[in-house]
Image (cartoon, helix red, strand yellow):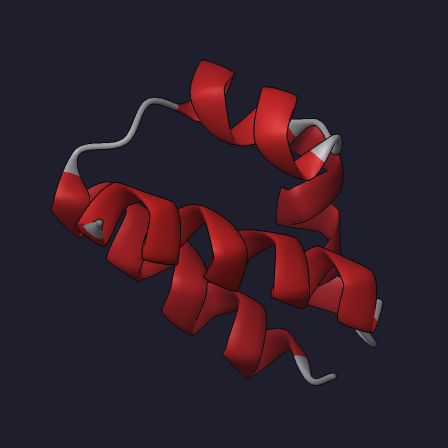
Length: 60
């Protein structure tokens, strides 16, 4: 996946007010590593999928 995809889901997380401590626990990747992925890509599909799952759980 591209870095722009990660940036999009990270923006959605911030808009929904989900704390980064919750994100790190659910995605199992630290915020610092996520920031590195936004700058250097490619982003593992598992990370993007974990973000999408987290966002779906927050909606439900």
